[in-house]
Amino acid sequence: AQKITQTQPGMFVQEKEAVTLDCTYDTSDPSYGLFWYKQPSSGEMIFLIYQGSYDQQNATEGRYSLNFQKARKSANLVISASQLGDSAMYFCAMREKTGANNLFFGTGTRLTVIP
Amino acid sequence: DVKVTQSSRYLVKRTGEKVFLECVQDMDHENMFWYRQDPGLGLRLIYFSYDVKMKEKGDIPEGYSVSREKKERFSLILESASTNQTSMYLCASSLGWRGGLDTQYFGPGTRLTVL
Image: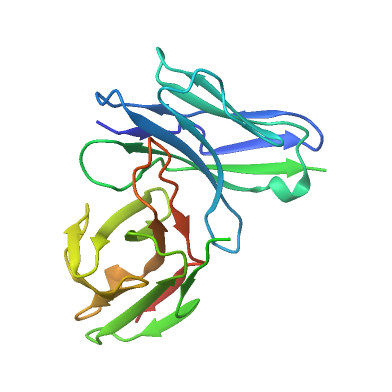
């Protein structure tokens, strides 16, 4: 089974509007971390936001917030007030405490911000 | 700021050549990773290392080897490059599990073309 599922290959949003990028995950480990990364056309993966499995509150970082619904195993990224520079690929990833040290990545969502 | 650098942004090699991809991090991170990224497949882990001279296979190690002689440097080696190894290669490093947060920081990527 896929550890991370991103069902939206592409999304469009009007500049200044908010957008939600979906991510669901699958794990039996009670201790895990969820990450979102942005990858502009230049190729570098930029860390955006982190949510721990025991965190009581949803994570926020500036215009980014993570809508964490533990029972539904979803960790959607919300970008408020979209800007043209937000156009990029967005990847959801998970790190389990047990097992290997690596991140499991989804296949990504390409976000395009329309002026 | 964490800095992860990779030796080349673009590389063109011929089938059968031995290829070295170098990665250096300056934050004294314990863990280092090599991923390859292909359209529609997200990032897939090739190898990772959790200490000097220690390495673990990831999901797709076939055709690759790695070397970590110093903590800050992690090399990916393609012993005999093949056309199906044409891809974007991303290096990352992380501090290790610290109560959940184990952010991986990525280098700019190397786009390798094997002719």
